[in-house]
Image (cartoon, rainbow, N blue to C red; front, side, top):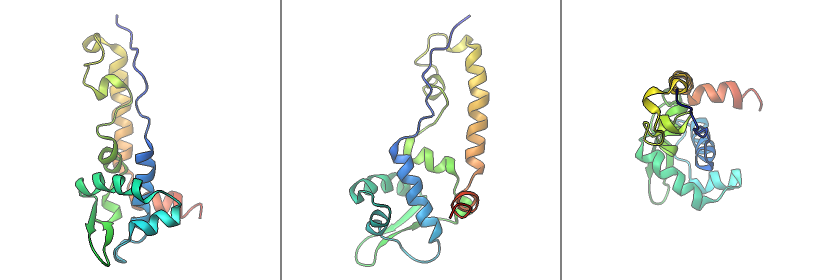
Length: 149
């Protein structure tokens, strides 16, 4: 029997925190034109320099489109009903898993192949990923933002 000594991995960084702020701002202004990053930074009292770093992987993942120059800004690439929480997290954090061994495919654990705990974590990780995949920006706005506004 092998023991699982994995650190809990589903710990989202500030990138994801700020990334959700940006995505929720853009979702609330969906189909109303471009939004400047400086406006979001000013409204939310965040560093515009850091937001630029956060926007880049979201653009690369085709969740956001950008237009440079005068009158430029950012907007969602598609309807908020079509953008999942999982897509946002993975754009900003990369592959996610509940424990380190799942994230790294067993490379960090010598007992990966025989580990009973790993099988449990695989099931739970799949359920969490499934929930995050089903939860859309539109649903988050309706269920959380508008509910507590």
